[in-house]
Length: 489
Figure 1 (tube, rainbow, N blue to C red):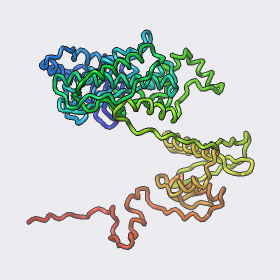
Figure 2 (cartoon, rainbow, N blue to C red; figure 1 turned 180 degrees about the horizontal axis):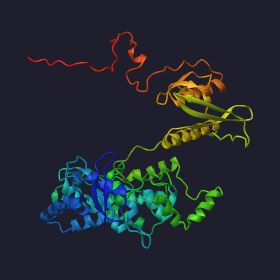
Figure 3 (cartoon, rainbow, N blue to C red; figure 1 turned 60 degrees about the vertical axis):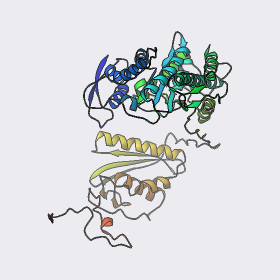
Figure 4 (cartoon, rainbow, N blue to C red; figure 1 turned 90 degrees about the vertical axis):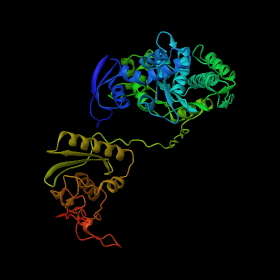
């Protein structure tokens, strides 16, 4: 175990959180958000606060399921956990439970299908006892892309679609089977029906297809069910972070990089499953290869369609992104290029504007060097200039940048010295694009910048002007009251 001071979000007060040493700070922050109050948090104590009441209800009902042991074990192995409302003891119209698919995989034994099936049954029992009046449950599976990476199966491929369909069938079948068993004990509220198709006949995972067919047969054996619906693909939330889920639901991985800038766990697992070392991956990347392929939008749509027949509540079907046949290509600048450096000062703050041109004289790059601003501001301005340069080189017209960034208003601002083309600027960006408009577009029709004080919120001349057809008071909206009167009756 380890202790860490963390808040539920960057603005929240820090709390001491005790959790397993292998769990990261993201999980600690999620736990801080799940536990109400301000006192120190221990994972075991916070979990026991919702597990104990559920287990006691199971004992009073005469159920011989070791529910407490199962739920604690599932949490420690990060197999699954209920929604935030259950943790806090709050009522919920549709109680939820998230199952982390990637956690059921072991490098030595592979995917543990029996453990996954047992986890589904445990989740249904726990939620039924936690919310006896609920007629719908939301048992969800998450981090499908993480599991596929561990298996070395490419997301969106035919084998991956078969695996996803079989997992969804196990989820649906086992959930409906245990709901039927609970109906015999607590009463049925809906007749049993098998209105979903047979799972895939074969998968690359040994035994997975057989487990899926067995789950469907178990669901067909029931006569009535305790719940109208049981399965879903939920949006990611704090429970996903607590369980170490990298990608919510059945979504593909969106980047091979993690939050700290290194490779994500999914990317590392993909390389490991393919026996690709970090050195080999780097060499392949430098040679123009793609050792970490990112799934396409079409692959996401195919995965949605493979799972949807088995899941009762699905998110909206992804819309395929149609890429233009004539994709924008970068127009490289010559190695030795023309251009100039303009030295100027805006409101007393010196800057150097450097341009780079193509052989035909059109603008291709911009650099903005600041003299005495802070390192963070200089860094932002440097990267902004790089982004504008990349846009210019990919065909974005300079007019679009001029339209977007002239009249942007932030300090430093004021009179411009050293550049006869611009007299005043409302910001460094305003000056930059006024200058470029004058020198590369021949535009001198941009209205003059209105000089104002540094703090101009509600105090500029435009704010004093009437808002036709109504006349505003002569006094500025920002002006403070000069006195107060106490009026009593």
